[in-house]
Length: 307
View 1 (cartoon, rainbow, N blue to C red):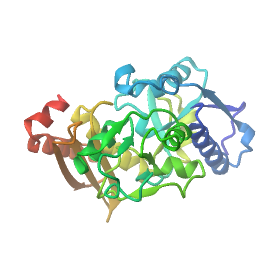
View 2 (view 1 turned 60 degrees about the vertical axis):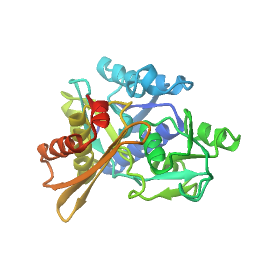
View 3 (view 1 turned 90 degrees about the vertical axis):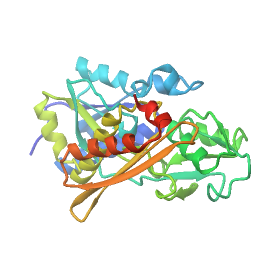
């Protein structure tokens, strides 16, 4: 049995959802190794992305605002590993770090709060979101909708909705579930809105050369989730996508193969290209081929968004 000589330090953002996910990781590790919970110390940090709420992420540093403090702690040795919502993790990571494990994926769908469905929204309704992917998909479905900037944690966005800042908003189903809000909102089917790449997945990152911690984390790595999320990350990299790029993707295991669906859009929703591919797990060339197919078929206006 692996048993650390001192508590392992688990870094996390300090938001309620991030802390809930950190506790899931701690509990999974303690159950896998038959440890008391005191063997893991949860170390919260207020991420830059949680402090800057008045502007879109694309204007102030992108997804790095969710990870840079935890990256610094890992690289300096202040923590042993960090927990992330995978959809907030940049595609290109520091070479010294690695995603060593992922928990079983949660519900990948978005939930709509404020209306029964996107089709049921009144003409000209205001929808609060800061996500380019959600913005583009909403406008592709309903060009009449008005998009209002919504930043902040789940509670902040729900408060803004209750205050009438918008008529509706979209939140990740997995996050609501992990906060005990599973009955909130109405799930949007993935054939209506394909989710963000990596949505619903929790990843645990550590140093590449920290073999002891990597061995400890291997006990809770969910292989199917890891394979599917890795395919989505490869697709993102091949598209040269960043936090401003409206991209949706979902990989699922189907009859022993990975079925990867991808969608690229212009921010105004006017241009859209979708595609899918089935391939053997671990084939890194297949997601790249899907990216090339999407870009090749796209209108030049859309293709220019991914240069």
